[in-house]
Image (cartoon, rainbow, N blue to C red; front, side, top):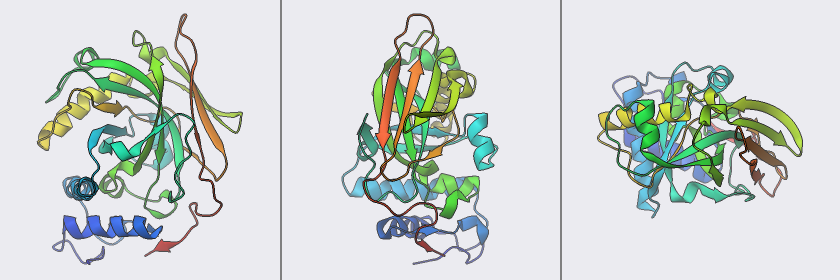
Length: 279
């Protein structure tokens, strides 16, 4: 199996995908590919596609997409300056209150507004058109779980790794009439740690859906009816430690009732950002 760092002419998306896949299977993290070689965004998405193929090969199916780095908070936290995206499969979906599986490497949590598609979107789409193509808004928590040691990576590494997509905790519906004004409070073990509004996701959560439709079209994909799109972390991501509970309460403006979604940490100690790693 090829290792990163064999030079700019040695790119093999399948080998790099298998490297990432094997590290996760062993419960280990990796040093970034871009520490030792050049990787373009196009090549990063090729690696991502190969990892998706491995997921599909074991019986998973694509049920939606995630957007990464649509908020200033997440771009500043991770030191990236552009958004990216990755697929969601049915194996990634968790109900509110569930625990993250024990094989998580270094899980972190961020609150997101999910949008479910009611019709197909292919090609660049305006925010208004994207919103009109959605049937539901959903309170979500994304559990990201980077394969790169201590979350040290460049945007290309993160993209290859599916934008760190691991699990999505799917909560209850939110009113769709004023998503930018929805307020969210993120807490860990009952203590508030961050707040934000829906506008943090690129001004409007649906704006990222329109961008995503255009990006997918460039790669021969399209958003399909029933797809769930999580539109980007509204706050910085926080660690999900063993035994801890992270919750987000979404507060729609006006008479909307609060909606809370939560996720528990792995049931065993250990792991975390300083856990086993491969180089």
